[in-house]
Structures are given as C-alpha cells and as structure tokens.
Image (tube, rainbow, N blue to C red; front, side, top):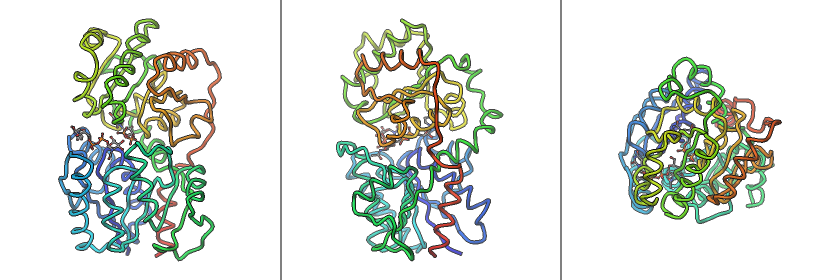
Length: 381
Ligand code: UD1
Ligand code: UDP
C-alpha cells in the first residue's frame, strides 16, 4: 500500500482532487491510501466545502486553516503547516495540483524534506511572470518527480526547459518522469455531466432559457485589482446585453465581489444593478456550474478551468486575459483572446454569434487521465 498526501486549497484544486480520489476509490483502493490535506486557502462554504461534499473528495484528514493573506504570509504559513504534517504522515508521494499558492507551498515543503512530488497540470506556461500562477507552476515543475501534463504543449514546454521527456524510470528527484496524461478536469466533466442534469435546478431557479445566455466569470488579480480593466469588462457586457438583448449570468468569485463597488464607476455600477439582463450571483456548486456551461450560448472568462470546460461543452469562449496557457483552445478557433479591450470583446462576441460551423476537436484526452496517473505512480513504486 502506498500513501499519497493529496493537497487541496483553492476551489479548482478541490475539483481536480475529486477525479483522483474517485480513481483511487474505484480502481486502486487496495494499492493506494488517499490522505487529503486542505491548506484552507479557500474557506467560504461555496468555495470549498460544497465541492468536497458534492464531488465526494475523500474527507480531509487535516485542514491548516490558513485563509487569505499577502502572497508571502499566506505561502509561508502553508509551508510551515505542510512541513509538520508531511513529517508526521511520511507519505510516499505528495500530490500538487495546478498553480496556486498552495501548489507553491507544497513544492517547497515537500522537496526540502525529499518527499517525491506529483505535479498534476505540469508544463503549462503563459510566459507571463506577472501572473503569480506562472511563478508557482514553474517552481513546482522544477522540484517534482512525476510531472503529468494535460496537453502536448505542456510536454513541449517542459522539453524546452531542459526536462528529458524520453527519460526512463525509476524516476526520482534528479530523474523526473514527464507524461502526457490528458486532463483530470475533463474526467470530471464527463463523469458529472449526467449527474448534474439530475441534481441541479439552477436553470429553473434563475429562469434561464437554454442556449440563450452568456456565462461570465472573472477573478484574476490583474483584472479585479485594476479599476480600468474591471470597468472595461463590465462596461462591455452592459453594452452587449442592451444592444443585443442578451442575458448574462455571473457567478462572482468573492475576490471580485469585494472589489466590484470600489473598482467600477458608480454610474456603471448603477446601470448594472438596474439591468435585468445581468444577473450577478454568488459562486455556484460544480453541478450548477456544469449546467450553466452546458446550456450557455457562449462563455466569457479569465478562469483557466472555465475556458476549458467551455470547450468540453462545445461553447465558444472569449478569454478576458492577454494570453492563455491553454493555447490549443485559441488555435482551434473556438476561443478568442480579447484581454479587457472593449472593441475586441464586442467583435469576439459578434464573430461567434455569426459563426454557423463551430468545431471542437478532441484535445484533452479520453476522460481517464486520473487512472493513468495512478497507474504510473504504482509502476514507479
Ligand atoms: C486563487 C489562485 C488562482 C486561482 C483561484 C481559483 C493564487 C495566487 N491564486 O486566487 O490561481 O485561479 O484561487 O479560484 O493562489 N476569498 C474569500 N473567500 C474564500 C477565498 C477567498 O472571500 O473562500 C477572497 C479574500 O478576500 C481573498 C481573495 O478572495 O483575499 C483572494 O483569495 P486568494 O486565495 O488569495 O486568491 P484567489 O484570487 O482566490
Ligand atoms: N466553478 C464552480 N463554481 C463557480 C465558478 C467556478 O464550480 O461559481 C468551477 C469551474 O467549473 C471550474 C473551476 O471552478 O471547474 C475553476 O476554478 P476557478 O475559475 O476558480 O480557477 P482557475 O481554474 O482559473 O484556477
């Protein structure tokens, strides 16, 4: 039996860990022990516990309760808490997901005490180090023992950074293994899509007409903390909604909730609050989110995960960022990078509204990425 310490912290990590917990429960229960540790980076019920319950992530044995803070303080507290638990549990592997401060903290804590790190979502690069996530993912990749990339581009990026992608096992700190696994988020979308249909009431609750609304999410610091950019996003949707009579639904991240009043003008704020075509709501559960994605007309987002899920459900996407690490989406023509440029956002919307043939080739694997990852770990143990 090998023991893994499965580290979750931010919302998307809880969702990704659900795919691994499920693979272990269904296929590797006699070979792998799944010990979950929550750093507490996200803590509101609708950013954390709701996903643990709904997606049946193994119940966290530990919650460090770190909460919010500056990058340095938050990461330092996590490192200190993680070190203590890793030394106590002595796992065979720690799992780090994605690119958050929780990912960075695991990288430092586990690598210094020489516990092998499995990085899920390795190799992704935006090539923009102004993003805190770019720093986190580079650091994690370079101290990991097993690196699982969801895309071929991820493998290519790692090769360019000196990883020997052809290297043979046994893999170790100084001989890391690099694999193209497919995307654990795709595993989840396929698995939960039918379940969400049966459980979610969000479309009725919000009185939404299927395939006739736009789903928008925004939470990147470079958008929320920059009044000009946040204003441009909300001004664009105010104009699109009224000019084209299109409904928007916006499950808003708490970060953005807190900054919206401060960072958009009172005049725009007033118009939006009176506009029945713009529904701003609290963050929703994953099942609700699946239904909003699946039955949207189009998605506008700066989220990494939501960009991909739009693609999984064959919805065109306006990416409210200057670049993306999910370059395949843009290459397919089914997503357009607009950043917060109002003209580009409107042109992107019109482009997709007028496109009759939208084609979404398979890019993200066969919905068995989590099983593949577990098998590779067992092979290396
Ligand atoms: C973090 C990740 C980001 C990821 C996102 C997913 C980092 C550096 N960023 O961004 O990569 O895309 O999670 O959602 O790790 N807050 C609450 N309640 C919560 C959590 C946060 O109110 O449960 C508010 C707090 O005001 C907090 C702010 O959101 O200061 C930001 O939270 P934080 O975890 O630092 O970063 P995110 O913006 O959520
Ligand atoms: N998500 C959700 N409810 C919401 C918003 C997002 O369940 O109200 C899910 C979404 O479906 C995806 C993940 O959260 O699986 C993406 O997380 P987020 O946008 O917070 O972070 P990112 O992917 O950008 O790191």
